[in-house]
Image (cartoon, rainbow, N blue to C red; front, side):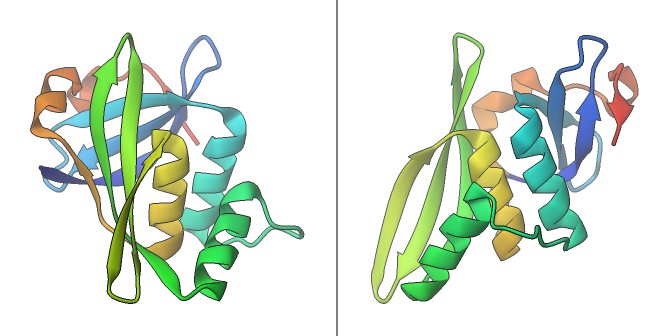
Length: 138
């Protein structure tokens, strides 16, 4: 596993929103296309901005907090047919749970909990050099 962090959100020439996951050395970036609402949620969590009404990710965090559970980590696990997969690891009392998730939702929760994000080593073949990205950062 490689620990990554959200380097930012970008928009490409086709107006796709992309979350940029970078390694700590910032030598490689894993770009994942996400929806605009998920992009907004990740950005808001990164900036510590609370919406007037809870977005889905805020609601899920509120429910987990209410139940005494927390997100421990997120792992971007795989890609199949250009679709990325992720797991959220949640701890509640002495139990640990692995929950299948879209990467965008998992990343939004990880940022909300300040939990580490990892990617499986096999995904390194899909990383790019930051200078090769043709996107506009938000």
